[in-house]
Length: 173
Image (cartoon, rainbow, N blue to C red; front, side):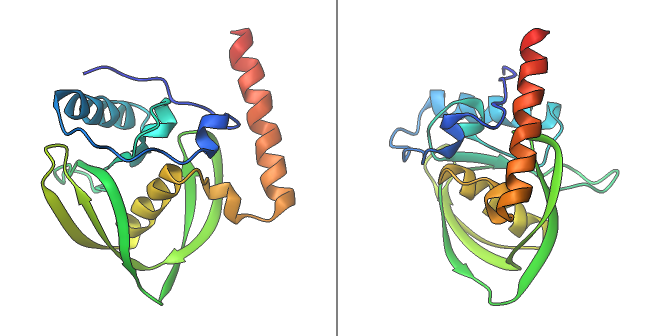
C-alpha cells in the first residue's frame, strides 16, 4: 500500500467527471487499498479517485467515528445513486481537497446506492446519516463537483482564494 498525494482545489482534475471502471483487476484492488490508506492517514472519512489524480469512478469511505468501534472500510466502484429520500439533512461538510474549510450542505437524508466492489461483485445498500452525506459527497467528486459548489458564490470565491494562497505557501515549502 502506498500513500498518495491529495490534490488541493483549485485543480482542473477536481472539476472533471471521472471515467467508468471497466477492468476489475489487481491494479484496481491496489488503487482501493492505496486510497483507504491515504484517507485514514489524512485523516478523513471519504476519498474519491480524482482527489489523488486518478480519473476513475472509485471512492472509498469509512464513517465509523465511535471510539473502540471496528472500522468499516468500503470501496465503491462505479457507484450510482438509485434512490434519494425526500427528507433532507444538513451536515457541516469538509473535504481533504479543501483543507480546514467547512460549510453546511443540505442533501437527501437517505440514499440507496448500487456499485461494484473491487472484485466486480454487484452491491447495493441504503445509507443514512453521515454515511449518506459522505457517499453523496464522494459521488459528487466523481462527477466533477465539490461541496463548495453548493454554496453562495461569494463564500465559494472566498474559500477558493484561501486555497490558492495555501497552495502558494505549500509550493514555497
